[in-house]
Every structure is written in structure tokens, then in C-alpha cells.
Length: 138
Image 1 (cartoon, rainbow, N blue to C red):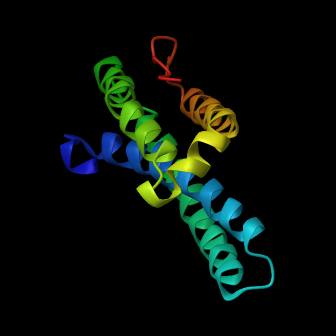
Image 2 (spheres, rainbow, N blue to C red):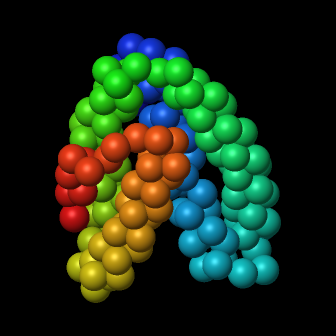
Image 3 (cartoon, one colour):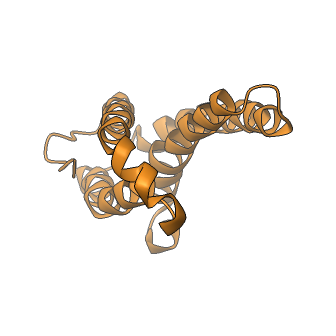
């Protein structure tokens, strides 16, 4: 996904606001669902590690955007509009073998996804981006 990015600002933005931010919540969810297992421990460690990377990446992105042009900032919003449908599709995907569970949990998945996307919007706003024209695809 970040391979389509033209600038460093866009690459860091996509990685921090989208990928790492969304994956952290998924690791937490898996850890809660697998109490007392090696998987829980692994997901907790990944959450910590990604949390550190995410915090550092957000700080770096703030520095990158301090003197960024309006055009550069708009490219980030355009990237968000381009990537959000992919993230939504990924977040709601379930293998065929679990399709029956997917139907039963769809409403909960949508609520969780909305929460994650709203956090992403707040993160983008904290970077000084005007995300009023970002279209949330849920």
C-alpha cells in the first residue's frame, strides 16, 4: 500500500494512521480472545512493539508536516480516501470456513471498525490535516 506513495510524508502517514493504528487494535482483540495462551502473549508483545513504533511514527509525521505545503497535506487526505475502502474490506474479511460466524458478528465488526476509523480521523486531525472531506466507507 505504501508503495503507491510519492512522498515520505505520505508513506509515514499511511503506515502510522492506517496500518499500525488498525493492526494494534486487532492484536488486542486476538489477545483478549486467547487468554492464557502463547498467542495471547505474542499479541500482547506485538501490541507493545507496534505501539512504540506508532508513537514514534506519529511524532515523526508531525515533524514532517510542520512545514508541508497545502498540496502535500491534500495528498495525504487523497491517500486516505483511496485506502479506506481497502482497509474496510480487510477488516471485515473472513475466510469462507468462517462465513457463518461473519454473518452473526457483522454488526459488531462494523461498530468496531467505525471506532477504529474515528480514531484514525482524530489522529489525522492531530497532525493538522483537514479531513472533513474524507469519506468513511461504513
